Image (tube, rainbow, N blue to C red; front, side):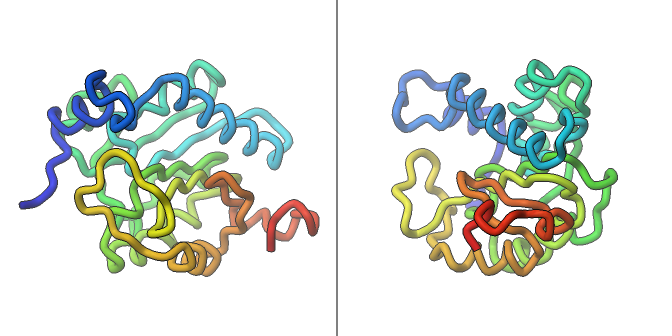
Length: 202
C-alpha cells in the first residue's frame, strides 16, 4: 500500500500528544534546529539570512519559525503531499513537487539556506540521485540535509524507511559538491573553497 501524506499522517506524527516519545514534532526542538541552521548560514555568508528553500517541507513547519527569526527573509516550500500544499500554500508559500522533480525544477535563484529535513531516507535511490544535483545548484549558502542511516536508532515513522549506511549519503552529498559541517549541515559547493582547513572535517 502506497504511503499517504494526508491529514491523518500529519496529525499522528506531528501533533498527537499520546505518542509523546514516538511523535516527531515538538516546537522547542524545531526552533532550536531552525536557529542553528539560520545562524550557520549567516556565519558563512557574513550577513543576515535572505532566502530559504525547503524541499520536502511537509506542512511548511519551518516557515513561521524562520519568519519569527528573520521577518524579511523569503521562504519557499515544496512537497509531494497534496493535503499539505492545499492547506498551507497561501499562508506558508508551499507548492507541489516531488524530490525527483528537482532534476529539472529551478524555482528560484540559489538560496542562503536550503532545507531537506527527514526526506531522503524515504526515497528510492533513483529519485534521490535524480534530484540531489538540483538541490546543490539551488544552494548558495548552507544546506540542512537531515538524514538518518542504518547506524542510527530511528524513532517515529519507520514505514518506508530505507536502512542505508552513512557512506551512501556522504558519497552522494560530496559528489554533488557539498562539504560536511556537522549536525546535518553542509556547505554549498560555491563556498567550499572559502573554508579554512579545520572548518570542515575533510
